[in-house]
Amino acid sequence: MKRLIGWRALAVLAIVLAATFAMGAVALAVEVTDIGSNGSTITVTSMFGQNQIQTAIQVSKAGFPNNGHPADAVVLATAYTWPDALSAASMAGILDAPILLVGHDIAPASELAVEINRLHAGADKAGREFMIYIVGGPVAVPKPVEDWCVGAMGSAANVKRVWGPTLYDTSQAILSEDITLRGGPEHNFWNVFVCTGKLFPDALSASPMSYATNWHHANGDGPGKDVWPIILAENGSFSGGLSQRVFTQLQAATKNHFVNVVVVGGTSVVSAAAAEAIRTSLTTGSKVYRWWGDDAYATAVSVAEHSVNGFDYDDFADDPTYDGWFNADDSGLANGQVFADALVASSYQGMAFAPLLTTPSSNLNHSAQVWFQKYGQHGTEDIDSVNIYGGKVVIPQMVRDELIWSLTH
Image 1 (cartoon, helix red, strand yellow):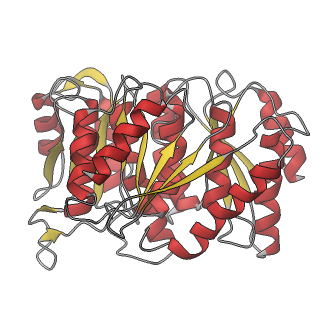
Image 2 (cartoon, rainbow, N blue to C red):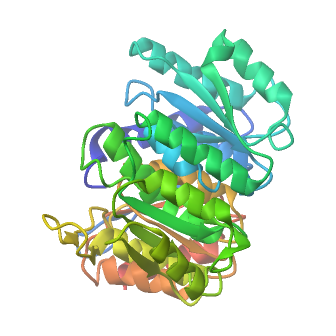
């Protein structure tokens, strides 16, 4: 990883050493394997636990290690269903926070409790206020979780639940919180992702870029206009087959200026009529683009290609081309048939400025295979490291072997 190789690589090594000697339920949380030939090495790092909650904890430890970059908050989402968390990456990025997954409660001595307390202690040590954000209502994340969080923080003021009665209401609530966290409605967004709310893969493919642009902005490392929230395309009868709520969110996010909207996914998930309705609803000069492929795996590669290589637009007279500031190096791979690992990967991939590819568990998807060959040792040689999210149940050894072959052939 080119931008974060120093402390973040040491963090992964520290986790490897700690996990090797751990006596808990997870015997090894991270595996690091070096592959390659002809004097060239690619490091494959696998972050995992026995379940999705533990995998999220390992990703958090790697992204926000002790004596490293402290988190200012943590975002909690249910480990069991995906809808409420689809838009959470932008908020987590603004907050400089990992996304952790939670069940029906938090046991005081559980690994999740220990991790939240560790993150809180890191913020305290750095003299920074720490917050816990809960995404989703009390059905998704029950009240005992919130009660534990208030007790752990010592104050209800440091715990905030962001939610609505449906996934689309929750998405709208997250956008409103994004706007508040960025300083109010006068600080609008210049770029917006629109993804279907009926399926999770497209939104999760966009999540690392959504997290990265917001994290980039919050930490003062890049142009403020490169901030991309995710709005979920809800079906309705208002315009182009979309609901009024979609257009309300777009207007709130982009008020009084032109904007680039990127629709993620093909016309089977967000129709051409919907995209046209979005275009005509925005300020003159706004553009609507579509990043897509023949299936969700190919769409993830399309998002990756655009994030790395950029795309042309003429909305900004002084900046006619989005150059792409992601790296092919440090690309991530998660199972595209389950949501949890891809969701929590958004923070680590976002901070590494690297895309997330997805695959089924049966074999390495062809689109992902082509990506890793293109940027691997017999391609552009841009990839020095790859991150795998989840254990060998979700990313089986056969898929890992195919990944290694793609990187080295």
